[in-house]
Structure formats: C-alpha cells, structure tokens
Image 1 (cartoon, rainbow, N blue to C red):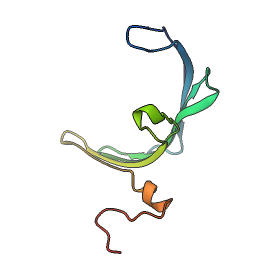
Image 2: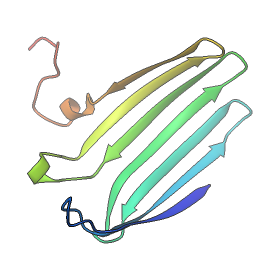
Image 3: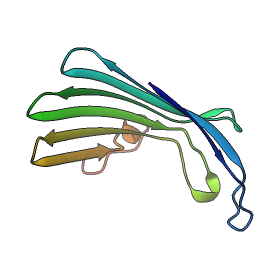
Length: 120
C-alpha cells in the first residue's frame, strides 16, 4: 500500500493554477499467483475523484496476464475532455516481451452510439 500527496505551484506564464491532490495504491495477494490491485487519485481543491483503477493479475514463472478497468472523472469543456472508462488486457512472456490492448469500448455500452466496425 502507498499514499502520495502532491502540490503543484501556479505558473501564470503557462496559465496553470496551484493544485493539490492525493493518490493511493493498494495490492492484495490472493494466492501465490493471483493478485488484486487498485488505486485512486483525488483532487483536494475540487473535492472530486480524478481517476480510479482496479486490476486483477495472474503471474507464474512463464507469463503474466492482467485485466484492468480505469475510470477518468476529468471534465474540461475548454479542452474537450470528457469522463471516460477503459479496459486494458496485458500479456507478458518472460524473456520475450509483452502485448497490451486497450479499449474505450465502454463508451458504446453506455450510450446509444454504435461501436466502430459493428453492423447496424
């Protein structure tokens, strides 16, 4: 488990203001191969969550497989940033490297829009 406090100074030249937030990470080993991981970041000035994440991981001597769910709660209309959710699959082979796949397909599950590449 880890916790962090961050303070960023205002920089009028770049148009940024002073900000402070806290973040926390935790991990729970379920068995010798399975782990549950989670984290969050909270904006103290705006009193709102910025991000949160949850992940389950399997790891043995040959490979690691994890599935993560991330939520981003940031809304900034000036920069066209909306809250979002993603799911990421990660597969790593020992001594060979890894593969990631990340999707924002949850946007289509929670709306009336059609996912790209699907028939009407």
